[in-house]
Amino acid sequence: MTAGELRTLPKPRPLPGFDATALFLDLDGTLAAIEAKPEDVGPEPWRTQLLRELGERLGGKLAVISGRSLEEVDRILEGSVPAVAAVHGLVRRRADGTIEQAAIDPSLEQARSRLGAMARAHPDLKLEDKGLSIALHYRQAPQLGVRVRDEAQSIAAETGLKLQLGDMVAEICTPGHDKGEALRAFMREPPFERSAPVFIGDDLTDENGFRAARALGGVSVLVGPMRPTAADLRLESVDAVREWLEAGLMQGAET
Image (tube, rainbow, N blue to C red; front, side, top):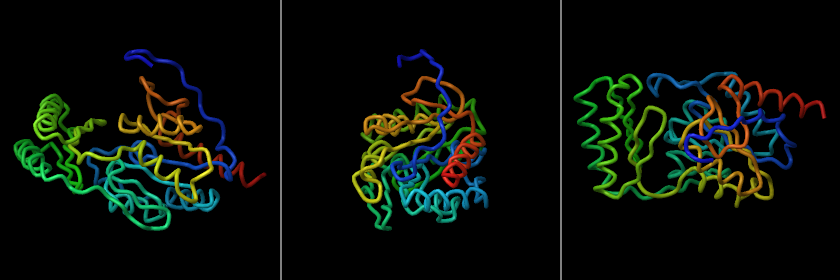
């Protein structure tokens, strides 16, 4: 799809057969509503139970692929999903519990220093240090968005670090895997191999995951308002994602 071109995306049909499906879910904006401060997102009993039931029904072929740290994903989801790709794929915990992660780039200290200085100068900016990346959120100070993005672009150009722009956030990352590469890695391993991936996400950071799912014979689902995207299908909101997943469980129980 070219820039500025919009098309209507249909709502996905109920979750395909559990035996043949691998489900990959973003967290913020997909499983959890986006909050003004990242730390305001917390556990929800309904979500924890839903994910546990989905993981069991899918035979473990369920993974969360998020920009958050692994510790934050586990805090919010109460450890209900064993397979997790965190920090946009730079950290990946396999279904068997083993963890792999990229080496920290020494240049990240420069990003930490410069973005930290901006956060100290503007208290409405929120600095999030994920170890392998440094994110500066400007949801509470949208008027500073251009300045934040410009500074992040400058840091990336000077250091060779990766710039990841998202919903009201600019993030400087250690170069390495993205969400699409994380999905591909899961699909090469049990229990995901020989199944069709379904990837659901809302942000620009999920586009690599959308493309990877399609390339592997699966489908991708955009959450939220329509925008140029590689996704095939769309759900309107976090609530719509919940309803769709719950409907899939109910349909599966009836067959």
